[in-house]
Image 1 (cartoon, rainbow, N blue to C red):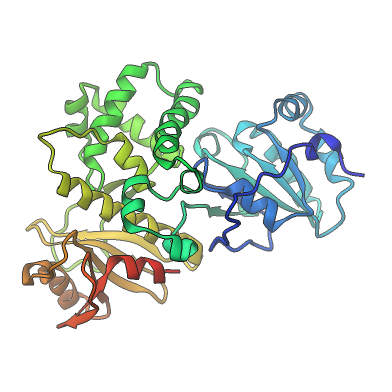
Image 2 (cartoon, rainbow, N blue to C red):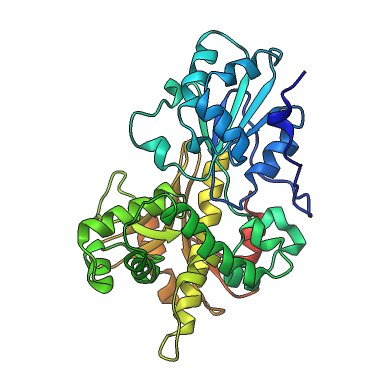
Length: 391
């Protein structure tokens, strides 16, 4: 008989019941993703018969924190080939020692270990199961998951975090999500000593979304030490709120820049944190949001494929730049994003330079127009149609 403590939380599925592109693994795995991206819904619907242990439940947390070995007792009633889900594993990393022991003893139990923060899992002497578990990631919705419900304009304004998308008041939910997430995950865990200082940093770093990240400039803009800004950027990455895209330097034939580009994990998060006023260029902000929206789709595309493909960008010191390079065993794509409805010759210049250096690459320009066509070596695609077809 299963432990009531582990099963008492109600099932809370998303109203839409949408199918996600993420496929489960046959072996144990970590499932990492920001809050509100649907990890709980996915594991509950994917593993309906699993023993579910939620560390968000204070009773469950206190019980296992006092006696981590109780997890072994719970596992004793699970048959071989059964599944145990531990939600928000980063709140109690000591449980990984028990999980590791059970796997090493030959128990044929699949452990699904979800987390909305990788900080405690990446730092310190945390047992990551010695390579016995995969690391999968849950991202915000991608357009193909929403189908006909996908709206480019709405995605650029509110983003694609499932919690926000499924809300009857997405704008309000997005604002609350941004403030509560940061408060709970950053301030509550003591990851910064100054709320005001971190708030200034968030405003300053929002101007780096879709740009090459120069820590010195961000530190100057928010009047914070460079080392502190570096720690803050790492904190955003650890909390899965942002990521850096490195430069593509495979068999480099040109002198390239070395700094990565910075992106928030969701276009809605960027729009919420980016301050605006009468002097701001709204077209530029929209362009950065569009580039970020494509970036989060490509990040999900790479992670969900699980074949080793990775996301890069390309920029020479002379200024030629391609927004995204997707490179893997069977994939080599160069993708440029333009917030325009008319394609001009200068929009294709960097892509053509890249293709001359790497003729194996498939070059695509995404734009806000409606027609699909080919110009030279470059495929021209409407961005909304292309996003819906990406899977």
